[in-house]
Length: 241
View 1 (tube, rainbow, N blue to C red):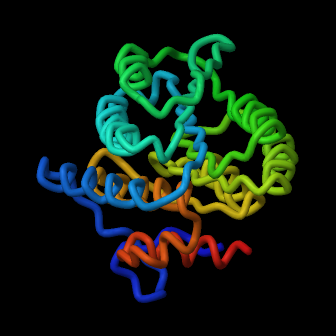
View 2: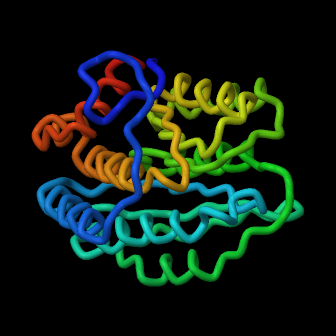
View 3: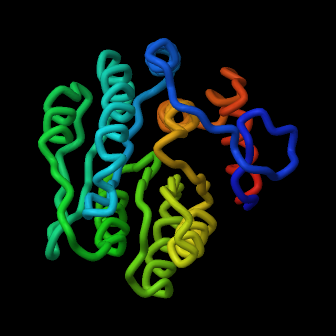
């Protein structure tokens, strides 16, 4: 799987072109997801968040973008989303899967970040449990650190890959240990890894839009919409298969 690439990439690796989203861009993003969800089948997606203290500076931004996505797909019922987050001393919680996402968005806005170690292993174990009962279209994970055994995470990620659940990992910052682990999780699950920061809301919004399309309609839906971010997602997914 290739490293991060620009949304306007023609196939050559490079740093993404990042800038802050204007309100009009967020509204356009909402319309994109509404259109895609309205023409695709139902899917289940797990959104997992690191809510430890280091994430506090960008937590509000993440809530805004994810809330916009939830609003869009929630109106069609095409995508069911489950929120999983960890923080503090061993706290790792999950919501039920919801299509009407008002309650989920309310929960997100009430979560405050708390100091603690990462619990990515618990997230992967939870995703495995869910996938063993009913199909999970994708796992989205957003975090900035990794304080666990990479071998243990790789074992769980490999099992998740066998269940056909791609992990789309968004890394905030440039922690090298986290980057190594996140890329391995993405590789083993046949997913994709991307980097973002507080100035890259536009990039994150577009990629989340592509994941919503993938979760509800698969590669064919991405190919049909054929936006730059969709082509980037297809390239990552095709390269990992």
